[in-house]
Length: 98
Image 1 (cartoon, rainbow, N blue to C red):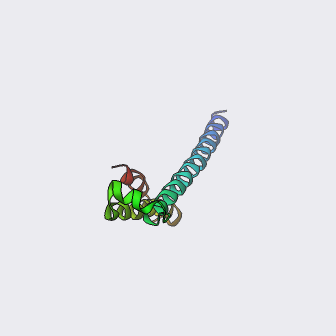
Image 2: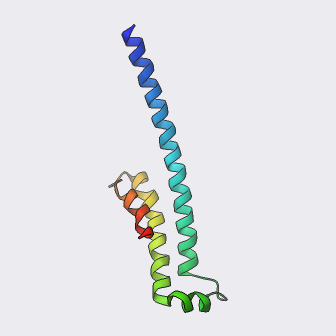
Image 3: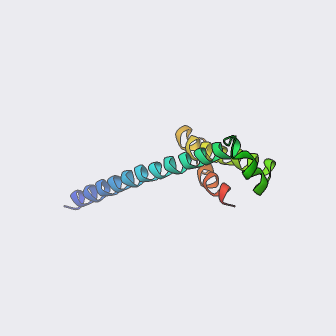
């Protein structure tokens, strides 16, 4: 009887862990897509918006923000896929927020 209870609870734990893992990957992918889109927009803005953006924040800060967000998008996905220093994923997510 005890073995059946342990097997059932471990199956539930594995299932909930798998659901949580899938949910986290979906959130990471959405956040990476947002960072990539906005980083691309800041690094390579449309020609008619360049003057307006540069007037507000300056060209060097605009390019820095764009490149930082593109790198953050890569940092959200690549450590988990390659399994090389996966703890960097949290830093990549928090980096552009500072």
